[in-house]
Length: 294
Ligand code: R5P
Image 1 (cartoon, rainbow, N blue to C red):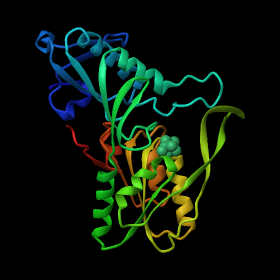
Image 2: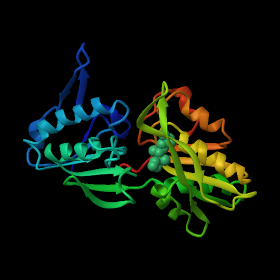
Image 3: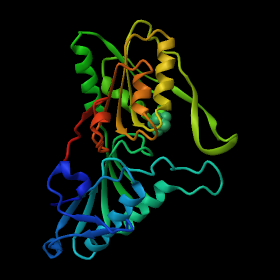
């Protein structure tokens, strides 16, 4: 299997695909010595976030050339954007999850390898819009980090997922107690108008005995941080001792999201490198765990 690495995965190895930008910001893609890939199996390593629209288009440019050369193309994209619009809540809504998967399939991707894909219920082999997907989970890595964190003080902890969708994360806890909460949402308002496209978490439901206990919250994504902040409030109100938070994808969509979580009674925040964070100052706020790269 030939590895092709884009500049957005340069931490995986030397970038072997050239991506540049014209003065008007349009993307330019070059696959040097493309003829050497003729009839070969190829795996592209590419991050699709931040700037998902641009990263997706650049990927299509790469695929447009590989389609005619390579025998088979796999894509390793540790975070799959557009995965949260996966069902029609209002008539006429576009399903971005399906559109993206169909695009990748039509441009020749034979398999997508990703982590904790939002529209999939657990790790394993799946298919969406005809695209085969190997969904891996960072759950074991996140759990191992939490275990080490609490082992240092020989303290026990319970694992909590903020909703049913992330409940498979708690399976890593094995003998430890693991629980799921349930989100209660309300419609977002912008200037008094209902936007309807992002519903804030109003509160959490679920009675869990955390009185005097340490807690580790595990989730797939931290985006606005609303879910995690509400979950911490819920658990603290029920007497939780120390709360730490781990998530696979640190999207951090908004201003000072990591600070917001840490300032809300979170003792430790840890994510993975599925999304590359470049800001050194921001980086020191949380631990970043390296995902397996094969
Ligand atoms: C939702 O179902 C996911 O598992 C995450 O809990 C959610 O995407 C986090 O979003 P936010 O940080 O904006 O609350």
